[in-house]
Image (cartoon, rainbow, N blue to C red; front, side, top):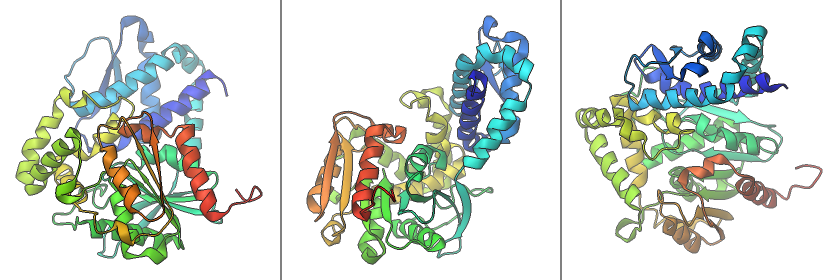
Length: 396
């Protein structure tokens, strides 16, 4: 694969990551502002617009040397990702003129071929979830419980890392990805969300899988395992966002987010007022550029934000103290000393109170670094699941 083919593959992936947020935004175009020498006579813009069409982006993409509009934080998150693509691909604009659209079309076709299989799953209360699967069904099963409200693309690196040796299944939070937006009054409790995990397992016929909870997904995993221990083989909990009632140790970030969730969950009117604040570019200040379009997704519209607050507040205020003593499954608990989002003390306590837990505290790494799937982290996950399933070298 030559340089342009590699760039086209990366561009298709980036556009796939911005598409969920872009689909929720009212604007019909994105502007990417560049220096005059980066404009390439319009070739750079045509290149990005070609990728946009291939992945089904509704908006057009314009590369300009002078901005015509002032983007919101949402538009700016998208445009920064596209600007990053041009930093790498701008010099390839001449190649693009020669090669035409074919490399981009091939990259998009390959991305569709490798994408997780999408499967609609009906919940016990009649909703339809977007579930996804990768890997061979004959391999050991892993159910990935994602962070509340996040597009599946945030977990895609985990799906790829684990999918080579496992049958990996995940889903997107109830109501958060309905084309018409979440229905008013959709059930949002922890039990409702944990029951979605069981519905996904039923749909894929997964007996005693390993369950892997990320961030707030760790709480849903613990609730499901506590209520239905016979349905799970082992557990891993990654940078969990835990509540222990009055005894909780939480970061400033956890307390601030919980306060915001309380306001947004109270009513749609309050959610609408506070969602407007997320339009300010300052909302991007502490969010890494790579994940910003994914992390901002739940804030994109007032209705989406209100529903997200209801779901996430239920998780953040769910006291797990009574769950831990009753869980005897082999469990891997992972955190880092420098996580200022979900306090590592919560993971330490979970590991202490579970009967068969192993704690791994990484020396560094912020909360979002778990989604970068370093070799170290993926090795931890793969080795732990392998040990539980006694996988031999001939059947990895």
